[in-house]
Amino acid sequence: MMLKKLALLGSLAVFSVLAHAEPRPPQERMSGRSSEYQQGFQDGWRAAYEMMQNGGNGWNNNGNNWGNNNDGYRRDIRIDRARYVSGKRSCDFTRNLANRANGRGEYLLEASNRWCGDPSPGDLKQAEVRYYCGDDLRSAIVKEDESRWLRCP
Image 1: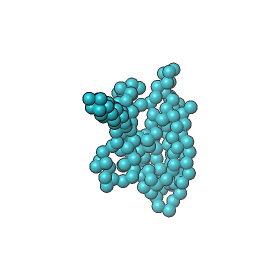
Image 2 (image 1 turned 45 degrees about the vertical axis):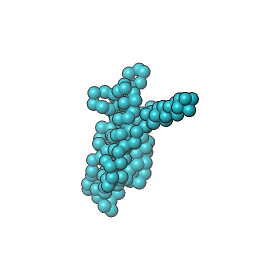
Image 3 (image 1 turned 90 degrees about the vertical axis):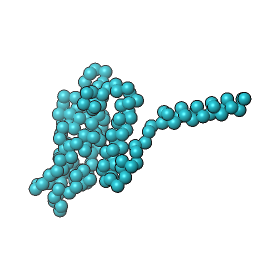
Image 4 (image 1 turned 90 degrees about the horizontal axis):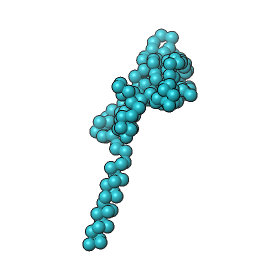
């Protein structure tokens, strides 16, 4: 009898640990996709999990968590526009960057072809980003193969 009770308690403990473990994104959704797609999918999965753990608290109607502080002033990053440009051509990576940086207090932006390919092979490029910290519109220019922190203090 005592052995049955111990087995039952052990299985409940294992179930409790598994029930509270962060679920993993379904691998079949990412199989055969680009690394950018996989990273975006994992970021979205993690954000959805965190939202559910919070009971939805702190999330606005658009599904973006902009981290309201106690004083009601939003200080987390909100990407307004992001472009990877050369003198001749450009590509827009606003949505991709916003998926990774929005709602964070800081984000390390690396200017490279990984955002949207090489818009102008052989030419020097730079990332040009506009983002909000609260109501404050900021901008950043990062040369190709360099990086810079986007921060909202």
